Length: 331
Image 1 (tube, helix red, strand yellow):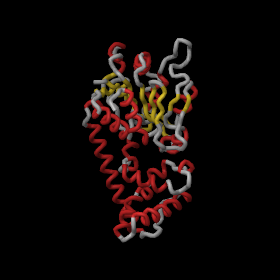
Image 2 (spheres, rainbow, N blue to C red):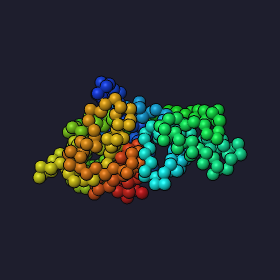
Image 3 (cartoon, rainbow, N blue to C red):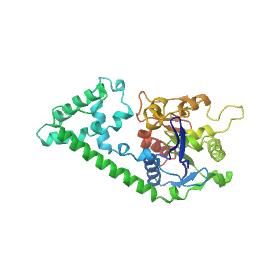
């Protein structure tokens, strides 16, 4: 049974330009989804924090807008792909991907079908209305359907998303590892060497106590020395900045291709709008990494270079975890 070191920040605050001591933590959905996938595959998942203190969920990650069901996200993807002949030319921002009016497209379409429209007619009506909202950067306006139908669909979506958020929070609270993690600082090199892989979920807390942590540095050095998979997601790659120098004086991951939350994605989220103290993507590039990001923001994107596996953003969670399982021959 492979042992995965599940490294989570225990930081609870981050100083932003316009908000000192701003609440932070790990990203709920990223941590839970990865943990469940690893456990279901038969791996032993050991939660570790730098100091052994219990990590906290980032309150921002519990906002219902980040917990819309996959079927709603998938339907909206089929809608925004109609905005331009080449989907890669459609600039979808985090605002679009979390806007209830737009993400309610599937539920609006189903109501239109009940009212007598075909699935194709309903999709076309919703797509035309959504394209106007996208172009003008505003909320969805009823076009071919009434306002009451729109509001009903949005209320339905928000209610479901809130329930999903609460359920994920409860599931995380039921996992002993997140309540009683092991302390990296207390583990010997021999004990760290017993792990077969490393995974770090995102959340801005990772930028606070992982980059300069000596325990993280030891774990990364030991696993990398034997080519064990090292995987991190979104802001999780901040732990790579703790990696020591090679014998030639270069950073351990000099010349490696990787991805992480990009500067453009950072500027679109609530933390970025309050002013980031520094940009993770720029810091990794300055250290010597080759940034390999998706053609457009918020696309699921995973980069594998030798034993390093990185995922770009919250929408890359399942794919990143899957890549690590594949590296461990568990998928």
